[in-house]
Image 1 (spheres, helix red, strand yellow):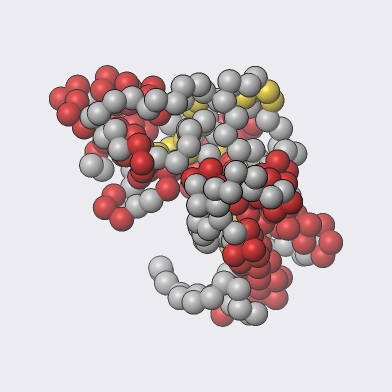
Image 2: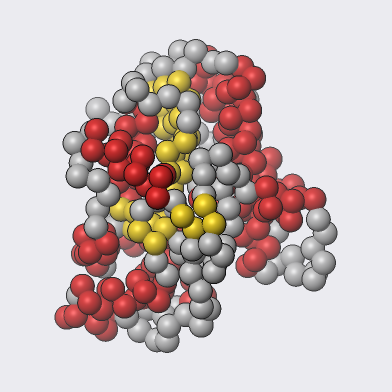
Length: 284
């Protein structure tokens, strides 16, 4: 049975108490997306909602809790620089630049500033999550899934946002709708499976699972869409993105671990690029 419960204010004390009553597991994917150049208006609401959800889970006697975090909690866009990403990395650079340093160029309304503050909020929210778990030693299992780009089949293509909307904008050459670079992406259904596995598989305990798989750029994705669906070539419009470069990070170990979890729940591993982009095209 599906039941929809309205939570009007994530920051209010006891905001989730009624919602979590009777639940055995909670997957918290509702972190607010606030685009504002002022960290004081972004960071605290994101942290408060996360902590409120943890406290409500503890009061409700929930057995397992999964936080859906973000690749921005790990690092900001980092092109043309070979490096390894580990499960213990956090985006301290975004926190420092957003919260501890003045904006020297005075551009408080630029896209880079919005993304800097957003990234800091996601990093600080996940750090607050792990700090709360470590300090309070709750009786429930706490897990975290860290997704990057999410493409594939959308439930409501006309009213979607985030990276799905950006891929559509990239395909159509509408670069004002695309925020930054893509690095890794997975099928949104695989990310959902990892969230469900984290809440359902008893062997998975207190750590991070990375929903990373295919490495690409927006221009490469435009090219692949043309190859996959030549009859719909008109979907790819305009010029390629002027920004060059790609993410050169190594996440092989993180991908292998996530794939092993998907196999444990009956999947072959991550969906292929062709299947992901075909599902994306079928939604349009």
